[in-house]
Image 1 (tube, helix red, strand yellow):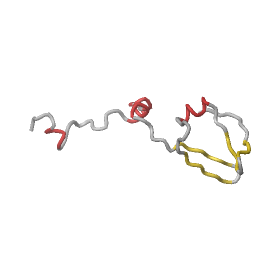
Image 2 (tube, helix red, strand yellow):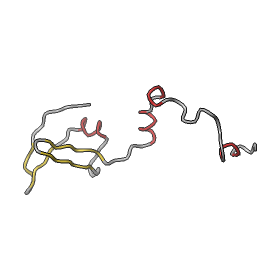
Image 3 (cartoon, one colour):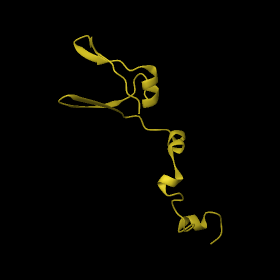
Image 4 (cartoon, helix red, strand yellow):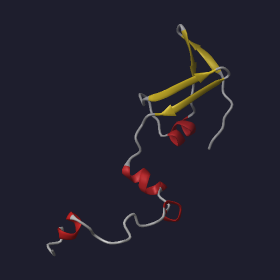
Length: 86
């Protein structure tokens, strides 16, 4: 997780927060990326609404953390017939 001190600036009739390029890269956002903003007294949380790519999900996969093989028992049902062997 990256933390940075920044400053809120005036932008038209509203306020804006500028993200540095490294912060945007870590968050996986670019210009026009959808985000979800949650506000509570003294707290602003900005979360990316961008879906991760398959490559990003595979890069983040850790077999030790996620238990390894999802179906350790072998093919069942339709998968058993996928290679032509009943």
